[in-house]
Amino acid sequence: MATPTTGPSVLTRRGVLAAAAGSMLLSACGRDGERDGAVPRATPGHELTIGATLELSGPGAALGVAQERALAISAEAINEKGVAVGNLRRTIRLEVLDNASDPKIAARQATELGQRDDVHALLGGALTETSMAVIGVAQELRVPFVSLAFGDAITVPLAQRAFIYKVTPDAGDVARRLAQLIKAEGLRRVVLLAEEGLYGNSGVRAMTGALRTAGVGLARTVRLPRAGGDAGRAAEQAVAAQADGVVVWATAPTSGAAARALRKAGHTGELFFDAGAVAEETLESQNALAVEGAYAVHPSSLAASTIANSSATARAYRELVSQYIRRHGAYNGFAPYASDALLLIATAARLAGSVDRGRLRAYLQNQITDGMAGMYSFTPIRHSGMERHSLGVYRIDGGAWNRLS
Image (cartoon, rainbow, N blue to C red; front, side, top):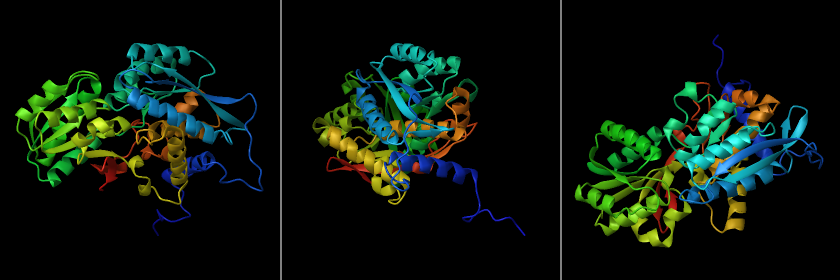
């Protein structure tokens, strides 16, 4: 008789690790799991210390500030009980530094944090360039680093990225979903407007191949200036190609500025964003008319209803959104990446029973977690863990992101 592969009595790698992460999320939710009113307390003097280098100022602040806010909320929630690590219960201590969106500063901060024995892991780098600057440091110092940036080069080649992990979706997965959407909308030719730099380079490679596979013509590829530059000239070049639509592959606030420039240059056709555009700045009043009706591909964190209401993830997510709105007025769909990075590190420490850097790395690369932004499946040969089925299609209607599929 064949051995059954499904059913409640079968323990699979996915089931065991997802359950472990779920238990961690239950703790992060506050009081689920308490017994007889007894609340576990952290062991005094013992911490899980995580160093974060974030873009709290400069061009990347639209993304970095949201990460800092989410980190603070999630760390407070987890610290209500602490993290069970071996026979101790540790609190999470965050050391957050502002890299001012400068890769050199990010590398220096990572070096300072990584050389300290009491720092167990690193996270941050909402911009591709700042994350890339941290990678060499993390590898040399053999400290786990969870990147919050977009860009496939962050985790490959794997031989040079043994301690590096990424929580954002891969460019190839986003590009395939965008190309399928463009095809379904009946468009025959599009222009790709991609920001300068490593992130834009990933988008150009991914979209070129995805559009070819989908049978959609790429009329032209135009590069946008870096954040703060004038997008007018690039928009005029894009409109001159007379395509049916434009794909903007850029992070906020560049994405919103590109949309305004395109409409000003006369583009009246369809507009598509990659996941990097999803931030409060894209929906600001100055961009409202330009982005209305635009499409975006982004993980499920933009729509809480897509997460099972009864799950630990859903409860933690609702608490994050509630606290974020209460403290900051409006929720940012990019925010859960930082919360998920924190959860991944904390879960690795819990499973490892240790805060040793090598053991944290080992348990990060064998972890399956249902996070707030999406589902992660890290393996020894794949450190870019967000699974493609976590992506959804959204459209901006009435100044808000609305999920279509």
